[in-house]
Image 1 (cartoon, rainbow, N blue to C red):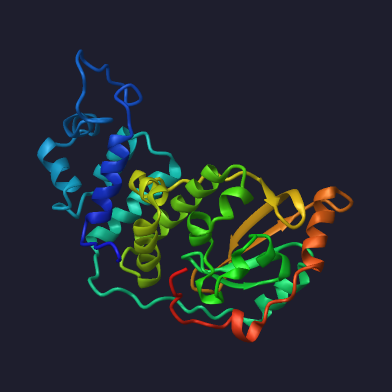
Image 2: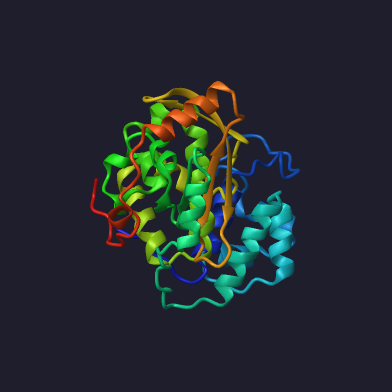
Length: 300
C-alpha cells in the first residue's frame, strides 16, 4: 500500500514534524506554568516567531496554502532553527507545492552502464555496489554483495538496502550501531520521497516498509532529512568476523539518481585481510540474472 499525497501535503508534513520536535526553549521561548498538551511548539508560537499570522500558518500546515513566499519559507526555517540541509529541503518542498504536477513520473531506469560495472570490478577487493535512488541493489562486485550478510539469499530483484536493514533478520546482528544506520537510511529516503512523493519506485518501497516495520514507521513519522553518517562503519560479519571499513557514497553523473557505494581499509591491517577474504571466498554474481532483472520484487 503506497502513501497518498496531494499538493502541499509534504510541505505540511515536514513543517508539522519539525514544529512538534522543536522545544520552546530552543526557539527562545519561556514556557508558562502547567502541562503542555502539544509536543514542541504550538502553531501560534511558531507563527509569532516567524512573523506570520496564525491563520496563514495553520493553512500551510494543513496543506491549504501551497504558495508561501520565499520570505515566509526562510522565516519559518529560522524560527524552527533548521540547519542548511533542512532549510534547503523546506525550500524544495515549497517550490514543489507551488508547481505540483498530478501525473507521477515514470520510474527511473534500472540499467547500469557497462563502464560502471567494469569500475566495480577494478575496485576489488574493496566491496562496491551501485544502488538506485530507492536503494535497490543494481550492480555489485563480490564483496559488495557479501558484505551485507544474507542479502544474497533474497531473489536479486528484491535486494534493497533499506529493505535489508529493516526486514532481514541478520541486519541487527551485522551492525552494532543498527539504530544509527536505520536513522540515516530513513533520512535519505525521506529526502528523496519528499521531493518526488508520487514516484512509484519510492512510494512502493515506503508503503511496504510502513506496513511491515514498526521501527521504520516511527522514524518515518519524525521526518528527519539529515542522516548521521560516520566516516567508518563496523560490521560483525558471520563469515570473516569483525571488520571496520571506511565508506564513501557518491552520485553517478549521467544516471537517474544512481549512487556508487564503496568501502576501503588500509593494506596490511586485519580489516583489509578480512575484506580480501570476503572477496576471495564469494562467488561472482550471475550477471545475466542478478544484475538485469527488473521485475517487481516479490514479498520476502
